[in-house]
Image (cartoon, rainbow, N blue to C red; front, side, top):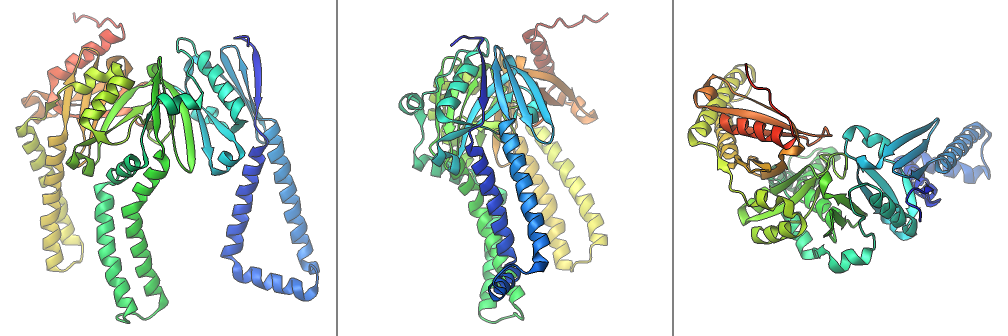
Length: 497
């Protein structure tokens, strides 16, 4: 096939079936939520043996609306396509008006293949094209659905024409035979470690409260209506979902997780109810994060994530490169998948000084105490409640501040920087200097006295997840980072007069 050949890809007709199932589901919800009215309507239809005349205009209007929506859906299906023309993608979309966007393949970060349950049964893939900039995500997020062979051909051609990046194999068997896979047990463990401390506290507290309320209602204590019973049940269900919601969603999203390195690209595939299969050129990765949730931090587990601005796998534009593993296994995985980041991953970080943590703790205690003093005067609570809140909030502020200070860390390498942060969780961000767009650092009078500053970094191309905050560290570290950023991007700092 000629490298510059112009090829047109039009959506598979099954996209109309997907749209139809959505409409039918909406109708089912309307009927279920209005069962009483629907029952009386069906009873009247049986009694009269036909449609009463007063319903004819309504039914005619509904029929016209359905036909109009169907015609609009068919038109949108027929007029939505992608043209692969040399090193450009021409995205043509039709709603009420036709829109056309031209995308340079050099700006494409990945081509994603996704499947929900219906698409799995039909043997088709939804194509998602992601660019380096989040500002173009809406223009490139197209509902283009192709049959399996056509989707894999499209992905192979696009990845092959992206310039310096070598084509990524799209043969699924290669990923299954040569890639790194995680079994069901590993996914379950990852789901458990994904629970946040806030979710655990809300869940445990809600279970205790909801169980007590429900027990009282069942035994006839302090209950006067069905509403109180339903309230207790809702509290209990919310508590249960707080405990299991995040693990369940994590398990469904990352089921059968597989990844591999091929040349200059990474290939990832995962998902149970919605299967994702996509490739990411390593040069498009803006940062690597090493995460430890609250439970994972206790048991010594870590997970790897990559940030690809514009990829849009999640709201924060990151996706998993591994599930939770022991540190020694993560080390070997980084060496195999991302050797470019191995030095940054192995680096020991500088911790925040104890005196600075103490100053931060005192500052937050004073602020929270002042807020509690005002609340004491204006909030009508009993003396016991006021005492508990007035004592608990400053203590909690001190605990949060000290925990954040203990977690904070900073390390500088020749090619990049490591930034560690978090409170009960811990996140270590590994980013090359050339991927940093701006840096700002400053400090108040107290910080200047100790020769430290706080900083904020921004990465190129995105809006979500592109800012990295750094706690109080020596100002000379930030000056060194600024010098290395300039050197990495071949800038020549002006000499002072």
